Image (tube, rainbow, N blue to C red; front, top):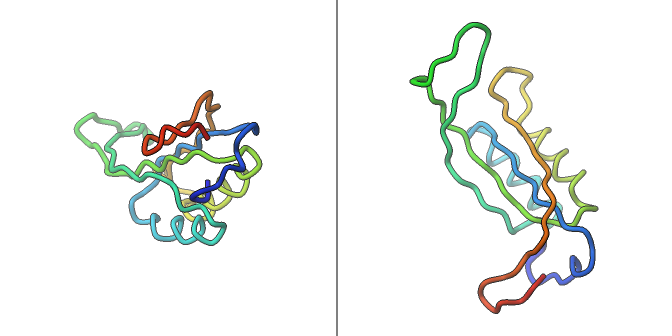
Length: 113
């Protein structure tokens, strides 16, 4: 949500959660900034995936987790930005999930948004 926005009050809110390659972060950041999305978190994560017959817990790969809460009406644009920035067509491009948000409250002033 754009900072200082009360527009989500009373409207459906969703959490967009994505895991992507660390090399695509700047592209995704640029796209999110262009649509006014400035409030999101990025966390370094490690994981593994099954690729063909090769998988091993010792072959953990670094990825980034992007998490943001936004109005339901913005989810399509956000998903498109993440897909556009992260998709190479190769295994390991990542995943996106959209989850419902029951409550959302800013800690600084305890304001429910």
